[in-house]
Image (cartoon, rainbow, N blue to C red; front, top):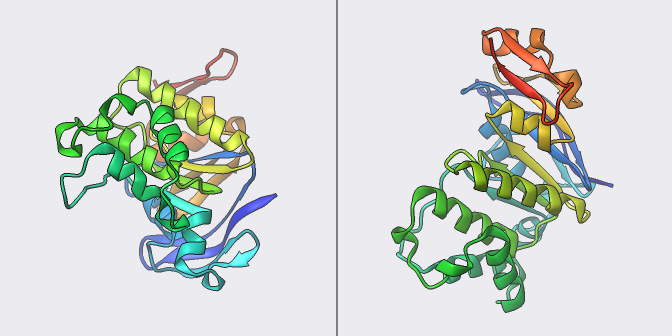
Length: 242
């Protein structure tokens, strides 16, 4: 089942006519160098960036959905989030239920346990480290149970244990009939956790498909301007500069 599709989506001087689709059960990785258009693409799909072209959500044009309906279908975990007030962790996660108009305690508590933040539920957000805050904002998204979870660099500020924990969580989330779009700089993690990849270059999708199709040394050398060693004979795969 197709959950979301981009058709000719673009933003002047930043993103050029991107076509992309995400199916239920999939994790798609958006990879590429800084400035290649990854965040712009994700923001367009999440409905927070004006764009040309069309985004279809569950087969419907996005303009046919009101704000609450859209928020129930698609949610974004941005690269950085801030709270205007020093709310405690549980209050922030509770905000994830706004599209549903309830405060379902079981779902809120489940999201906190999923993200590994239960022990901080009464602490203020400004008392946590950057990596800890990232997990709080992820729990907020999880509490809303969107069919499409869009995560922009969710593991960038996390240690090795929580990088694996969060990506395992996103993988499991997709396996429940939902879908995940995640931008990620670590190509080894992308190869390990994603079903398909979209390699972006200068605002366009340079290559898309399976990890082995996309993560070829010649593609990576062209886009990243560096020679790359790729070894899919081991698990997890090895992708690193020469």
